[in-house]
Length: 202
Image 1: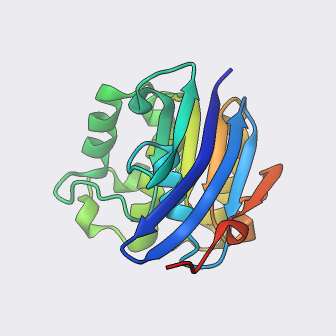
Image 2: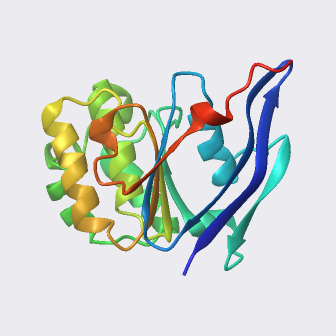
Image 3: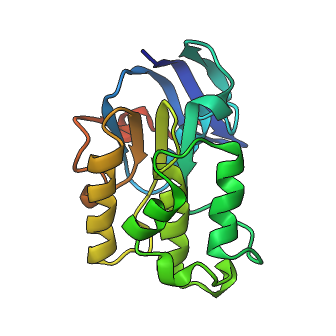
């Protein structure tokens, strides 16, 4: 069973302390939401948990110990994909390195992306770009799934698709969602509000 233990995590940028003394253990296949006001550090904490950036203080311990690229699947509005690649090429490239939960054709069908396979990523709408990123993350076999504002640029139908895909494909994963939109974390049984770790100490 996977556990991710954060001990006294703090993050400081120049004179601003985003948050401090965050200690918590994420474990098993539970679903967690990290909540908080804008600029409270939700996305930053998610990156620290996933090993993308380092904390100023504290540590993150993974048990069993593995490289973070073997533990996490990740989606964020800040992620960039290759603009010149078609949707088909992006999926084929990604799953050369990752294990898919279902075959590619099923991924495209379930995501309603079949008609866009030959479109370059740069030609897609902002909502479709996010859907491609999110589908890649959801359909990747990994112990944990980290989602930063997963429904960015989504309309109601795509938000519903997201909720259905999580329910269908991610029950056996640990999930951590950084969000302040309830529709993005309706399936989360535990909520952590980062505002309580927010400080203006200089």
